[in-house]
Image (tube, rainbow, N blue to C red):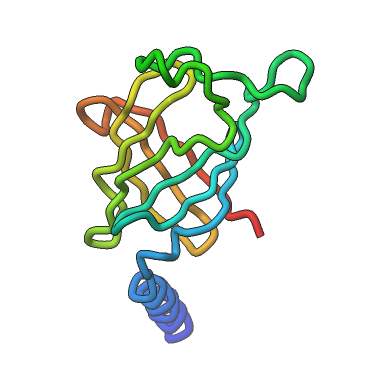
Length: 144
């Protein structure tokens, strides 16, 4: 019985210690999920990310980056999607990242974005229109 209580206490202490060690800059770095690879960086008091790779980033030749053809701004439709800043204005508040904007090259729309570090190497993001309940979650692993 004492061992079980001690184990629970130690687990709670380790979870609490991670929560207390979260620095806003812990999100900075290169992250990858199944379909995307991004680099998150600090930008004027918030966090942004540029698109390094996506599963459908290149034309059929596998080398030529696709253009941002669905961008609502006609002047930007000829730019390459590789390296564009597609996450911006993500702010750290109460242990989470909120109020971000996600520009989707797939449909040319901009979505709201929030994120949370699950651990030093695990990041969860949720893009949505309107309310977070109606959206899509991506789970990211830090690239070492």
